[in-house]
Length: 65
Image (cartoon, rainbow, N blue to C red; front, side):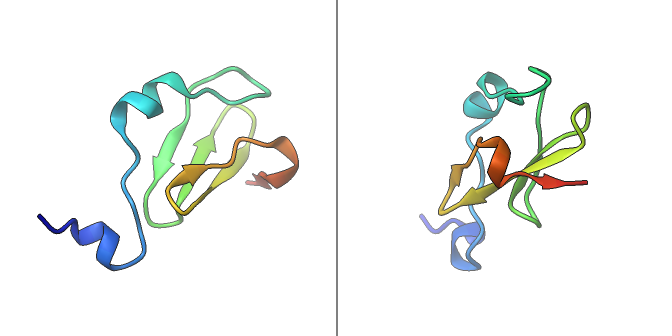
């Protein structure tokens, strides 16, 4: 079975993983931005990158919104 998102370099985040992950600063929920391949913390105003399908939850790697 071919995952269409894998063919264009984008991978889906496992919904169970997304439920578990929280922002390391605000401890609030994250929103997956599939197009940008980021996890967004609206509370903290940060976007955490997803590299090779793995969320990078390091504050110093986050982009300010």
